Amino acid sequence: MITTKKVKITPRELFLILIIRYLKKKWWLFAGLWLLAIYFAADGINDPVQMFFLLFAIIFPVLILIQHWLYVASKDNKIMFLERYYEIDNERINGIIDHDTYSPIKIDHFIKVDMIRNTYLLYVSKNQFLYIPIDAFENDTDREWFEKRYYQELKTKVFRQVITKGYITAKVCCNKQQILQF
Image (cartoon, rainbow, N blue to C red; front, top):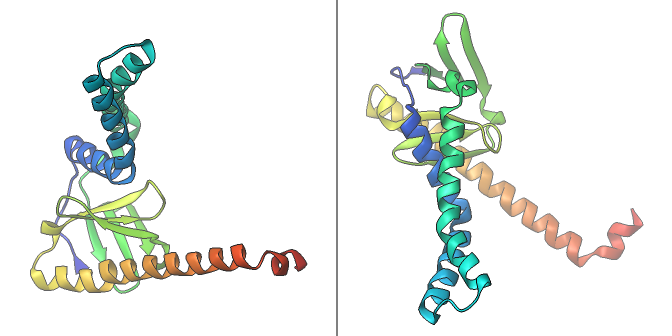
């Protein structure tokens, strides 16, 4: 079992992580909006529809930033900013805030893993994750063990799920008659 140093995410750090996650998922939306806005601006704004798209391409990113900042600054999220440390073993991660407040999570409950800004994000749901910075580990041996046991294994698990889902989807698409018989 390894124990991390105490970690504390700041509102700024959480905001940056959320924005990076959003952009990783929705980069195509911003690219399309900006390409359309550049096209309309280069062509000359001739009608109200083009003006709308140009203004929307400018205002939409600002609204996304405001939305995420309001979420981070919400008083309902104050528990996320409390200092904690993690006890990690082969089967689970215990997030410990104090001796009475802790949350054990089995490795099987993690659905996804990601790394953003030298921080491991271990997801237990689509929008809920554990935040473990690389520098939270006491030494390189602990960090390497964690990477092998959790990070790499969870990446492989997610990859297997994607492959399995793709196979099932292909089978469903190709064998409609067979599925209707069930």
